[in-house]
Image 1 (spheres, rainbow, N blue to C red):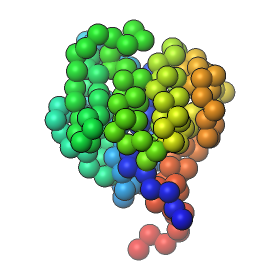
Image 2 (cartoon, rainbow, N blue to C red; image 1 turned 45 degrees about the horizontal axis):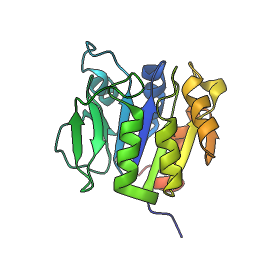
Image 3 (cartoon, rainbow, N blue to C red; image 1 turned 60 degrees about the vertical axis):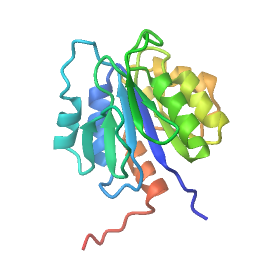
Length: 197
């Protein structure tokens, strides 16, 4: 029987724009779950990450909004200088609480709150990054029965975040960057077929 998932969370830092430009356009637009993304950005960064990704993706990509309810087939990007949280009712919350792991938004904050909301029905993905943010959150996802995926350190522009995640969690899959989107499509939708009618 196919395992039912309710959401995918993605954490990324240094090298993230390049990684997201490969991952997000690779996801099918009929993805049956929402995708939530934390990319470390400076507080002064513009808010165009979601716009840039939306332009090159079949999946709808937008900046997350406070109190917004999640929709399948949409990727939500944390805005600069706001933590992105998932409330127990599945809605989003933006917070200016203190930085976690020197970061706001923090990957751990998203992963931990999403894990509390979705339990075993959550997929966590750690991509390239130069710090340890996300390691605790991915471990929590795994403890609660979710699926843990980490980009292979040798395919990461910055390998500290993937390595920290691998050291803290017995992850389910370690994959090169270009294999993660096809893996998620297959996991969440099933094998793709050449027939595109």
